[in-house]
Length: 334
Length: 298
Image: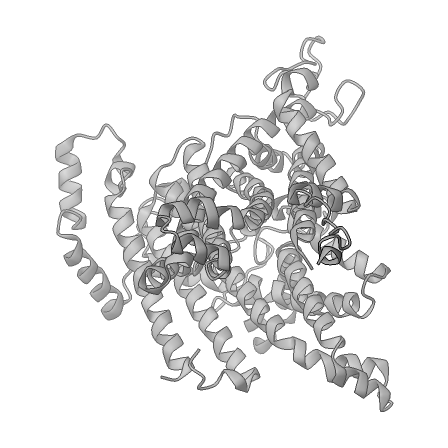
């Protein structure tokens, strides 16, 4: 079986397992949705009536079937009862997911170039001052909690308000939910720049961990490659130092970098919970936190599935990209 | 004949020094070990001797008495090294007391992750075959999701207190131990002395406990140290979100959450707990890196 076919089957299976785990867990755990909604002291009759209303008294397999058929026929994920009472969750997700995607892409656009450049510089001047600076920076990047960094950024750059995707005063209806990606196409440049200003701080805060991790992988990859004979040959035949590093060495170090960068993108897309909370960014992660806080289980359930789904799909895309980058992976089956 | 017997005295090899001693000697020359060790020591001292080191109690409003003066959100001063927070508590004292909860919750969750992850990894690596496949597929499914999601599901099910936070952080870290220990077990099980043990009829349990486990000690120590750094960040993160723990306790993440609410009044209440989380995570990471360098025979 080809590598990609196998991986896609694996991805589908992982998603199914995740879905079942979330679905069953939410219905069988001690703090079940109905009790959470009416409090532990609700009368048993009321709880029973509500259970019947929601269909939670039926066998679990039947519930799985009913839920899945709702999802596939009508895109029905249930209704929120506490976060935004009465609103269909599919609608909520439709609003929140674009915000998360824009934030994740913005953070990646900062993290990937920064991390790669830092990694290359550190490898070229291994054990020198640039290397030490990069290594300390990457250690701090991992150790400074995003929520502390966010608070610092917010109080230092008070002129850059964070919190919404657009200033409250700005009246703009987005057709797709993607404010930043859509505005330039509609010629709304004022909106675009306003949105860019809003996303800057959260994106910077969110980019630190991926940048740190990418720089470490890029550094170690480049150190391996730079010590190989063909790199010395390139230098010996007269290629300039920068050409040797960028054109000869880097492509061979790029595969692990692309892998880890893709994995990080998956982490970001699956809801940057802490960053979204610090900056009150209306994304998927924030929705999940609100759902857990309000014990709104249909929101938690749908959010968890969206997160798991995104993560699995992105990882699959990363694997596909790796196969495209590295022909050795094709057809080998392992 | 006699010439043969009275040949040169055989030179005895130097007494084999203990591997622990060797590691310690290597650590002595490592700057990371010193900085990391110092940071970790400071925070352990905070946790153990909070009552002695903190100038005030965690829920004491020391500057209140001075007739009607507002004592909330004070900047740092001689009386309050890191200022006071919105509740008029002394931030430095709460940071010192916070070390108790952070180290305890982080330590307990890593201990639990180790106690579950290590046997899984050892058994999977030693046994191989379908046991290995089954256990490792299970671990993969766990690793296939962001840790936050797993934590959310645990916290959604059991809302209150610190126990669910500890359980959630433990669960996130189990696969890390299982994977690493399995790799170590895969290597050691083919070594001659393990084969020899099997040959003389040692039981599987004996081999796992007395032969395979000791061989995996150094990766376990490294993982535990690095894991503590991560666990502190994870515990603080969940507390910051306000979905785990108890917001009233002196805990660094909860303190930051509260500081965020009053950011317009003062940044100072955020600095103390933020630095505490950063420096303790940094300490464990540096120490873990140094230990890895020291154990690595290369």
